[in-house]
Image (tube, rainbow, N blue to C red; front, side):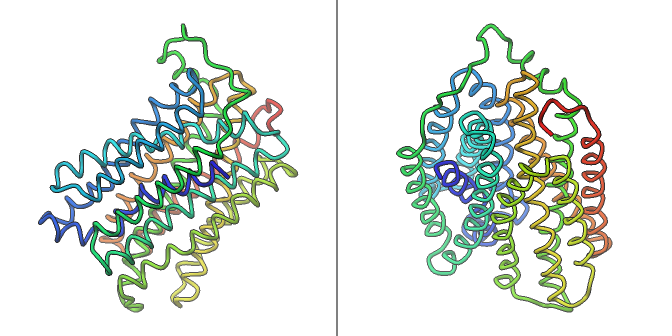
Length: 384
C-alpha cells in the first residue's frame, strides 16, 4: 500500500502540468512550444535521477532514498504553486523530476527484496497500477481545477495530494530487512556496466523503450484525432480518453498473478499481442470502436509493462547484479522511449494523419513482440 501511494503521488505530480499547457502559455506569455518545457524539464531530470538514485539505493538502502525523494519532490510541488516567473518554474521542475526518480529507481527492487516470491509479482503489478492512477489523476484533476481557479489552484491541489500521500508513505513503509548493500569499493561505472552485461536485461530494456514509445505515440496523436473531424470533440471531452488508464491499474496486478502461474515468458508476449490488437482496432472509423481499441491497448500495455519490470528485478537478483541499477536502467529506457515515440507521433500525425501515427506505434509494438519472443527462448536463471 505504501508503494502504491508513492506511485500515485509521484506520477500525479509528474504529469499534472501536461493538462495546464494552454493556461501556462497565457499566464507566462510563452509560446506553446516553450510551455511544453514544463513537462520535458521534469522528465529530463527524472532520466538523470534514475542513473544516480538507482546506484545510490544499492549502497545506502531503498527506504532512505524513497522517503527522501518523496519529501523533496513534495516540497518542490508546494513551491511550484507559488513560483512567480517562468524560468524559476522550469528550474524547479527539473529538480523535481530528479527527486521523483527516487520511486521508479527503487520501487520494484524494494518489493522484490522484501516480499515473498509468491506475492511479489502481484505487488509490483499493484505498484504499476498506482502509477497509472497517479498519471490519470494528475491530468484529469489539474485540468478540471484549472477551469475553476487557474493553474496555481490546480498545482496547489496536486501538491496537497502529494503531501497526504507522502505522510502516509512515511508512516506505512516498512524499513528494508533483506537489503544487501553493494560493496562500497565497487566503482559506479563498473556497477553500471554490469547492468548491460546480460542479454536478457538488454532485451527487457529495449522492450520497455519500444512499448512505451508506442503507447505515448497513440495517446499523443489520439487527442488530436478526437478533436479533428469526423469526431470534433472538445478538448475537455477528448482529454477524458485518459480514463482508459484506469484499466491499466487492473490489468497490471492481474497479469502479475498470471505470471506467477504461467510464467513471464508466456504472459509478456500475450500482453503485447493484446496491445497490438487494440492498436489495429483504433483504425476503425466509429468513435466507439476507436475508444474500445484504446482500452484494449491500455490493458495490454500495462500488463506487459508490469510483468516485464518485475522480470528485470528477478533476473538481476538471480544473476547477482545490482537490482536497483537494473530497475533504474529499465525505467531510463522506458522514458527514452516515451520521448522518442511522442515526438515521432506528432510528426507522423502532421504528415500522414492517424494511419501514420498507428504506423509509428505499430513499429514499437512489433519490435517489442519480437524481443519478447526472443526473451522467451533465452536461458533461464530460474526466473521462468
